[in-house]
Every structure is written in C-alpha cells, then in structure tokens.
Length: 390
Image 1 (cartoon, rainbow, N blue to C red):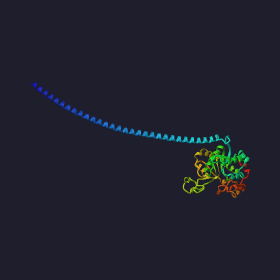
Image 2: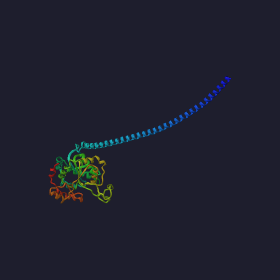
Image 3: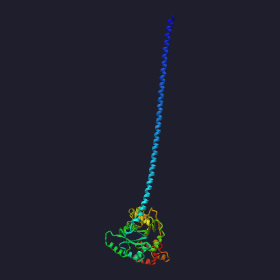
Image 4: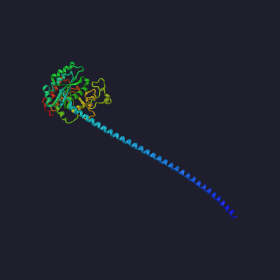
C-alpha cells in the first residue's frame, strides 16, 4: 500500500514540476522577447540620434568649408588688389623714369644742324614768316632785329638766338624755296623747318618749330613771335630772366576769346562742340602774336608731338597742350602794348614794353610802312639788349 501511495505522489510531483517548468519557460521566453524588442528600439533611437548628429556635423562642416572658401576668395581678391596697386605704381614710376630718360636723351644725343652737340643758350626766338612776307622781314631787319655780325655776336655773347622760321613748299625745289635759300645766303637769319607752308597749318608749324628748336639748341626759353610785331629784345630777355628758375612757365598776354561757330567766320573753330554750348569761350591761353615757354614745356612738346591735338587756331592749340599739366600761366601785359601813342608814353617814362602791336590788326597795322616809326618812338635803344642782366 505504501508503495502505491509513494508512486502516486511521485507522479504528482513530476507533473507539477513539469507544469512549473513549462510556465517558467514561457515567462522567461516572454521576458527575453520583451528585452530583445526594447534593445532593438534603443538601437533604432541611437541610430536616429547618430544620423541627426552626423547630419548636423555635415552641415556645420559644410558651412565651415564654405566660410573657408569665402575667406580664401577674399584673401585672393585682396592679393589681386594689392598686386594691381603695385603694378600701377610700378607703371607710373616706369612712365616717370621713361619721361625723364627721354629728356636726358634729348639733352645728350640731339645735335645741331652743323653736327656738333647742342649749343647752350639763354633763349631762342622763332619769328613766324611766310614765303610772301619778304617786305615784313625787311621791316624787322631795319628796326629791332640785329643783322650780320651783330646777330652772330648776340648769340655768342648773350645767348640770344633770333631766326625767321619757315618750312618749304608742297613742290620740292620750287621758285619760292629758291628765293628763301637766296635770302638766307644773304642774311643767314633763317631756321628751316621740315614743314609744308600754309595758313591752315600754323598749329603744325608751331609744333614743328618747338620740336626742331629743342633738337638744335639747349635753351632756357623758347619764344614765338609773328613777323608784324615790334619787340624790345633787351626787355624781353630781362623779363624772362625773372622766371628762369621756374621749371614750367608759359608767358604772354592771356586771353579767352569766343569760340566761333559760323562757317563764314575767319577764325571759325570746326570742333566748337568740344567747348560746350554755343556762345562759350575758350580756356585762357596766350595770344599768338608773342609768347614764351620754358625748356621743360618745349621738351614736352617735342617728346609728345605725335599725340598733341591741333585746333584751328594756333594760339588755342598751344594753350590746350598745357591743360592738365602743372604749368604756371603768367599773364604779362607788357607783351601786348598798343602802338603809338600807348607804347610811346610808356617809353618816355622809362617803362619800355616787351612787345607792341594793334589788336584790331593782330599785329602792327600796315607794319611794312609803320614798323620803323614804332621802333623809333617805342624802342629801348640799341644798347639795351647788351646791358640786359641775364
């Protein structure tokens, strides 16, 4: 009996134990699955956070890279600007050195027509004349312009060169050219220019004169005079000597006349539109009857003649070349005295004029007949030029 009861109890406990193990296994499996799901959720969240952090890092890195690129661009731009400034400065320095070297080269290498080095003088006077102006030239030779030995002596002792400047005709070896050659052989007072004569070529002739004069003489001043103007050489020399230490001076009677537009006007300016509205005036410039410029300005004309523009009027043209330059304009009214009785009254009180002419004639009216009279009553005396303190 006991054995049967013991067996029944054992079977009961085995059954209970199996059932307990089943339930325990089920619970464990459930917990394990729950733990695995939670782990997967945590891993998913962690992946999302990593992705967010990665994206933010990539965004920040991109911004940083863009900032670095912008900074590099700015640095490159600044470097280019700095380089441009350096190149510009070097170009300016090179331009100044080239300009200076050109002046030095002109002073060293240009020779006179006789083949020797340029002769140093105080001033060179070019008297503008034409083929048909023989009588005007004779009127000057008979009044204020020295002749022969006196002309040579004036150059040697006082450094004052006085020459009639003239070019050549359009036809080589024409009659008028031969007449000038004959006249020059007699008086030896011409300065021949490589220029075709003509009334409408006066601006070009002026440019050629200064360029040729600079190449021939090393002067402190270069003077242009018309052949119907009376001049006192001693007073001219003394006046210019007062300005000899100024590098760039432009001396004469400064004026500002109207810009003429009508086709029938004698001094019409074809390029009148460049000077503004109709009725405007020209800029200040020395009247063309007589003016003087210093060596630096004459050299400037010589060095830049290919690009210097020419207007219809010669005096306007010269004035235009000095606009924008550091040039001192000297308005000296002694360069434009009237003829007797104006210059006569001044001469009587010892205030001799540099030059005399009539505005209405743009020179001494009827100069061939009256030049000797003007010289007689307005002249400074033959000794004045020799006594001039240069």
